[in-house]
Image 1 (cartoon, rainbow, N blue to C red):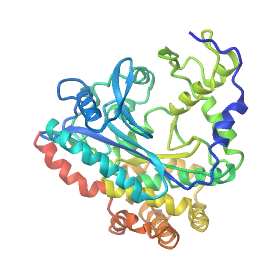
Image 2 (image 1 turned 45 degrees about the vertical axis):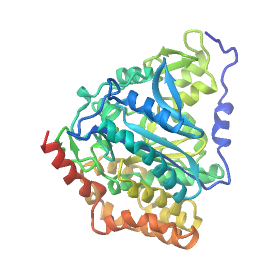
Image 3 (image 1 turned 180 degrees about the vertical axis):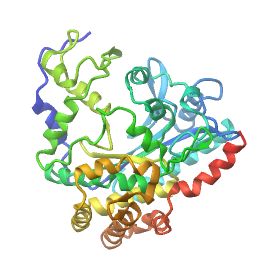
Image 4 (image 1 turned 180 degrees about the horizontal axis):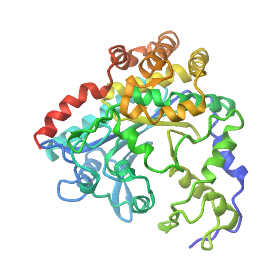
Length: 427
């Protein structure tokens, strides 16, 4: 085991975020889907002749991807800057190299899907664009063999943490920031937007074959996973974002430490601040430890060398491109950013925090004072739409699918849920 003699300094951590400052205006995407049987919509296991492990192995040969291994088990594939990985319940995640144009992200998604399609047909697997497993519940979804997932499952104590890990699927949009002030504005705005976005992209009503009564059961699961590492990364601070976010991460209890191929179970005995000050079982904190620990925090909006916005249900692809377009139109145009800030400045931290707990059930119909989610969502989309049309090579076309839905007071779930219900009734 390697021992680190020098203590990790706070300035070294801060440099992660400082190094993220850039002039780029690119978009990143992580896109999860639920692998289900074409016959009965039950989840497909990692194991077995027609399981996800075999699917990944076959696809690696078809399209020349490299294996990502954990203790000799295939837990993903990598090709240049793109990855295909599996979440705890084998949710299938595509993570793409950031692109400037949405059309380039769409082209890459289309290419990977077209390569996958023949294999999926042979395996009789459907990658479902839905926010929660519609038939199989977590008790019937074995964890894939990635070792950290077992430690996470044993540690996370929320009443729906097993649902979150094994059943849910979402999309994550990543945006750039040019300096700390720009990061602060975008981070605060993304957090204020988050409950409205949850309502707009709600797509997880059916779980375990029944109507849950929630527009987004996925959002409910995240609210009941771990109070210390979910929610808001900061209290919409106006001070130094980098320092405030570091404070948030330092106070979170640690789950494990990794040294090479060895994983050391911590199970919340210390937080990262204590680890930096005192070490743990002869180990001192490293910058890689911090990066790993930071990735085990799950706020709606997460800070890295970019900003990760994480609170969307998995949705059909045309709505994924709408999400990308929404953030591009607002976050990468100063006048649009100002308009969105002005629209949401009437809502304080406490209001937004409380509001988040009502949106999963009521979706677009949720009220915040005199306002409905639907009305605020329409205005956010309009701000992004005119920004894209005037300044971003007419990428407003990608916003039209969600724009039309909101106009009708609908969400992706309103269109997909009837299809899901037909299949679940056959089980």
